[in-house]
Length: 445
Image 1 (tube, rainbow, N blue to C red):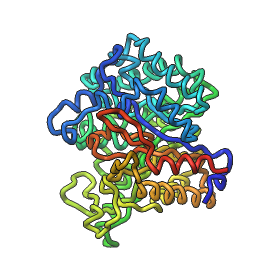
Image 2: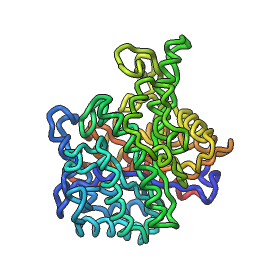
Image 3: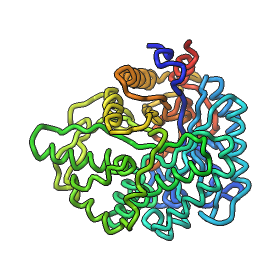
Image 4: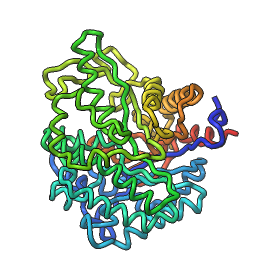
């Protein structure tokens, strides 16, 4: 398998997120995000860690972007910190925050790297969360104000925009299970958040198209292929309910198919938040869809999970021994299955794999990280992308998650996903063997 098999137009890159890499959590007028607040609460983050410094990308962006260049990486997906631009969520713009992203964008262009921007990657301003966050319909206006500032300041150079990152994850983990910021739980938080997030995709998509007519506009979705633990009817029904939440809840409304209300009875309560005109406002013709797949899951019927009456069967309970540090089964065909499933929707736009990668027990020895497992993981998953492409799936790019090791949300610094090893005490960067392989792969002509 050679890179050239994908064609000259296929996009190769890496992805990051602002909160996970930037640090400088109070520098130059930045406001507090929900993750700044959440990470201060006892027991929420593994080992009580935080992202106050993390990779210090705020101060090391020049070196990191130049390192990308040496690794032949020509496309870089990153997000913009809402509170670095608007410290109070709305209102006064922080010129130093704008300048930072201008510097990042200009350095990318200087190095011949195409910047791809995600507007929202989970770091809502805490002052807006205090007013209800995504459960408050006013968030549509707040998000539009933030997006407008970004488009006005960066739209002349950013040609690829993504509205949101993995909406089912930040609404589910943050507003239903309470395991991620802002730590809320229950349907009364989850359902309004779902609806307002869904509306925001079309609303911000139309805003970008109006302000930057030449822009290529997308948004990203996580997708985990699901299988029943057995063919017993109760498990198959449980799978259908789980699939409606995990994989269908957000993609189908933007495609004009509406919410999958018939699959999960409790979802019908979302109707109380749907106002006249909303159903017409939800669909939007994105130029591309970002797909983010890491593994597959097996589902079984369970009385312990209300509303969907289903839960995930852990790999070890199924006898699976090949897992990542996150206890995710290593199953490369999951990416092919996700691509094929997504491409089966009518009128689906081109697809980019905007995240794919793995965390392993990386060991630094003699100045090297010989992460053979990650290299193999990437090779095997890229092979699945090629298979999908050859069978007619309109997949146009692949971004590795992630460039450097970083703060991995509630898991802190324990899982390392990076192509580049970070010594978080010294901030030294060491390209792992997987990163060296990726650089060689990208250079292959």
